Length: 349
Image (tube, rainbow, N blue to C red; front, side):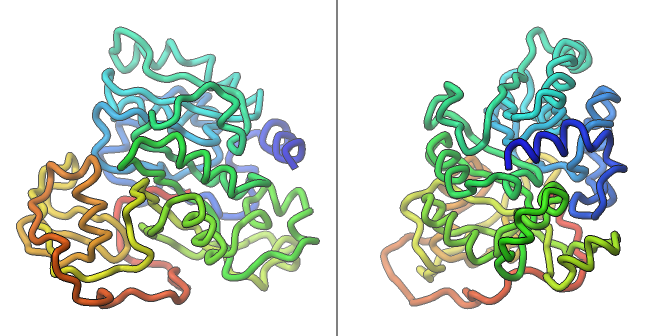
């Protein structure tokens, strides 16, 4: 499968126009502050990039970021500007052609960003074998990925090793493709369906279980949209299955509980996160307005208190009294079957 994916992304695809589905979304609806960031990136890097929406979590200055499946380096070079010269970005990819493009423009981007030294590096390797790349455990603040984990033949290993590399309180914030059911084996073996990020997609509930097994106890869905398949031949083979492009955030917080428990807690957002002066969106169900007392479950309280977001919130309550399950904690299909009208500014693949 590695060879098929390398062939597809290294030789078959010569540009984003060669993709045959909208699994990788456009930049439409991208926040305004990101447009000048992307305008600083070399044209060749942009042309050979196959994820279009930018995976961009909040509160990035000074952060150390790892990008899984970094391709030609577009997300890396965008994030390099946002973390600043005090931060750093490491990209990992297995495709020589893509890495050649990314490495060719390191010095160009250093000069473009006005940095004294480059803060971006690239490593060749497989994202399910991160332990072979000399990366230090507990060293990254954030791990990102844009529509790549579905291409891995061992997604459990990807999540487990990502967990090991994150600092306590760090997160993996990534976009990927998910299916409403498990994909039949005969479709998984199709190189075009796999390369188009469809037949390698996880059934969403299997993903939740793998994430929890890896240590990410409470996966949080940030946003999602249904995927349309405009190619009739592809649709005939796999169009009976609903697919979704979705962004998740998984925190390395081992003390989280398996469900959302109510301890009578609340938070107040200060409005101090850059580019988020009025509202901070933690996930699809937590849009937190500045200055408003916002009731939260114990897990959400920890996701804000025990992470890089702490300084931006006031915290009300503790864990002394338990009031049962938090209202609205459910286990049905988390995605919307119709396109959401909400613009959260989150990443997509």
